[in-house]
Image (cartoon, rainbow, N blue to C red; front, side, top):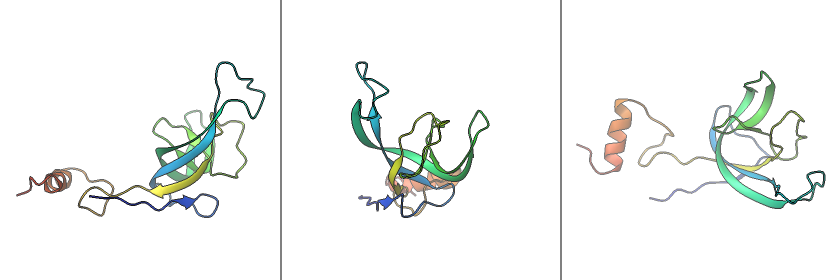
Length: 128
């Protein structure tokens, strides 16, 4: 099986509310010997993480964020080009996003209960 993804520039279009996505994040890693006051200090990175997009998110401390990406640890990141809020834990923006591939042999991203058991068995060639 092959999965192909289409990367979308976050400056041009955002995903639908609640959509799970693969998100390309850009930023800088700070090292022990870098001066954190220098915006060019550290090693630049670009990586992909699973996240979901939401039009409205309330952080654990009660702060509200709009049109943001959230990872499994609750870290909020904004689309590239938007001014980062000083309240954000990380100011590493999302440059691109892609819809996650569907489950093998299906056209959906998740299944629960008996449907999950049946679909998994069929995908593994163990179906009845």
